[in-house]
Image 1 (tube, rainbow, N blue to C red):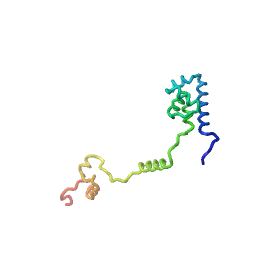
Image 2 (image 1 turned 135 degrees about the vertical axis):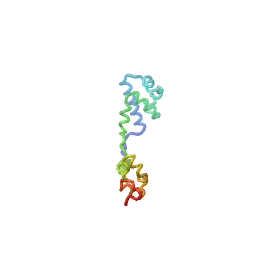
Image 3 (image 1 turned 180 degrees about the vertical axis):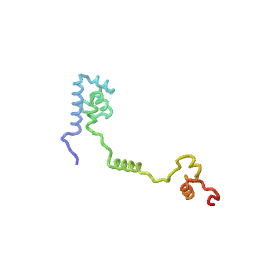
Image 4 (image 1 turned 45 degrees about the vertical axis):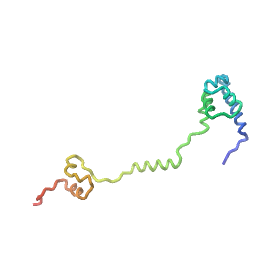
Length: 141
């Protein structure tokens, strides 16, 4: 639902210009002083104070010179993450916590050398890993 104010665009610009002029005078600066501090021309300051349109960059420079930029930005509060960004972040966090099951690995170099197939995941490697000792020919006699 849109909110409407009784002010026209020109009325808002005129009021804004009056407030800029008031702030400048409270700082005891001339239009030329403000223009020098803001890095804009004196005619730009004159246009703004008369309520005429100007580039946004010039307005930012003037507000910064007057020390009013933070109040201007405060009119537009910073938005937090959107619900979709929160959902994506929670899914990413849940996925990073989840680990797949894996087969036991050789804990030392001797076991890895004794059972080279243990890292391949073949059935032969599983049998050899269960016995934990090398099989020797004619051992069963």
